[in-house]
Length: 172
Image 1 (cartoon, one colour):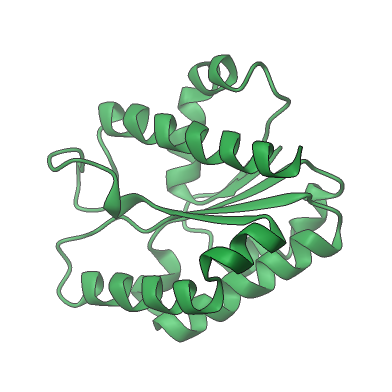
Image 2 (cartoon, one colour):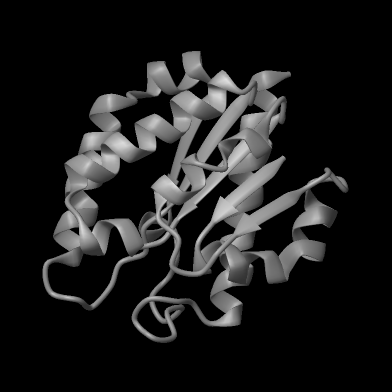
């Protein structure tokens, strides 16, 4: 499995041993860079060549600086290229809610766009899974309005493992 991520991916990797234990010591490579946007990771997607699972952890770097349509197109390009290099399943995770004015509206617009682009039937057929944090993390887990407290990342790691295990079950 290859995990691509920005600062959220970097902080999630601090839970590596927890994640490894739950994923039965699956081989995991972390390709993380604080501030990275989806296009940056799409340029590195060849690292997911023949991976069972490619995970893209999206923070808010793209959405805060762009619009939901452009971010949706970037996600679609990442999924297409990951599949082209042989990733058997793709998991897209991300988008915490923020206190920034207008940002949460963008998250909702992006969710609708992704659901339209990848309805449940297409997700199953293409072995692609979306897991959007803001539906799952409880109040009080966000430290600075953007990043989680370590306890929040531990909880996020639980959801991360669930999404990855689902993706693995789909490809078996």
